[in-house]
Image (cartoon, rainbow, N blue to C red; front, side, top):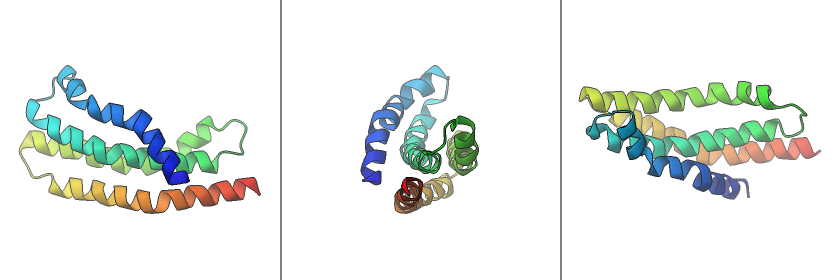
Length: 129
């Protein structure tokens, strides 16, 4: 159930960002050769960020004012995804291989798909009891 809700969240919030990423790259004056890398890194990174956010929300669901604590919980987990995506686009601009960064992002995606729903469900079970 948690994974289905994460998928719905990503389809509504993450997929539109991925689809308009070439336009955003053009507006930010990125070279055209980096548009594909930007698209792929967003395709790999946005689901990870959505899944990490669900863990943070599940951990703070019982708190009254959860804005700051939610940011404190989720920001350290999201920084590696942001760094890997940024470095992959930078490697494309430098003409270097970006396979390592894409592999890291793919591993983070597989790990978050495997572990985030379990962690979110466990946190929700604890907050209900």
